Image 1 (cartoon, rainbow, N blue to C red):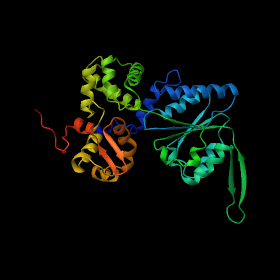
Image 2 (cartoon, rainbow, N blue to C red):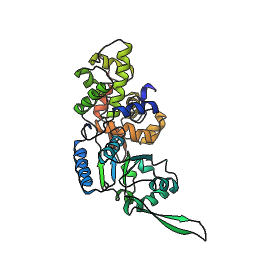
Image 3 (cartoon, one colour):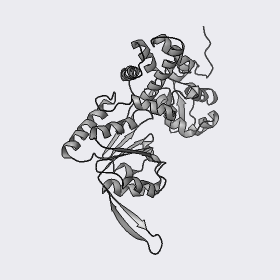
Image 4 (cartoon, rainbow, N blue to C red):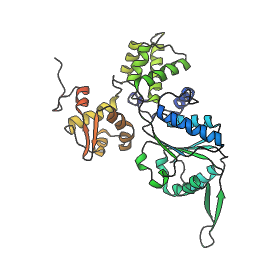
Length: 340
């Protein structure tokens, strides 16, 4: 993994993603944070269980790494249901969707990640499946075409997206719940890090967990990744416990500063300040200057910078805030401040 990607929430490889599975909570009781959402889900799940009905369709939206996939698995566990996972880009044709839906049993959960990337033709088929639990299939296309209605078992779709604004109105309206996941506060992240350290049989002090929490960008996935990198550093340096000094040294090596910004974040803000006089500037221009994908900046970099007050997003473009100038050591003229 490149050093600049350690705090990218969606940059885990397959082996690391398998490792994170061991750290995921498996029930509402184990889930930390997002209290309002958990309280709503507990009521909905208990009510559905008492009636013996499947849960209403749910849509989770928010920045990557906040626990949308984890919540889908927790709901399946609480409902005692099987879960099938796929993603919007993977459902290229209606047949892909139909093949999954016709194999679902009553009460099963279908988790669709990146649901905003469903092809339009597939989305047209999912409407009646969600609303009426049936699909009209066209057989023998051409002059001899005929329609066959397929009855489906009552199931629950759990959709996840980082771009809620790209979901069409008709699809959004078919979800019984639309829940936005917020960035986690420091105390919740400390609890998550301490819990994960216990699962990983790693000793960590309160100061060590707090230091990692401050640099975790309000994101549990990043917190767990930083914990693992710090554990590696402590092992190599023969430190028996992860304390504040060890965690700071490990994060410095990986290019993560005290605010959780990595090299890409700092380069993003520096480009706005130095090359575009602090903004406003369009995100496409920033992406071209950095040689980065525009969607990467919008989905992964900007949400945290906006939430922490480093960036303003206006109709005219992106603007670096006074907080960004201070953090990076620039004057309002865009020049670096000289040490006294």
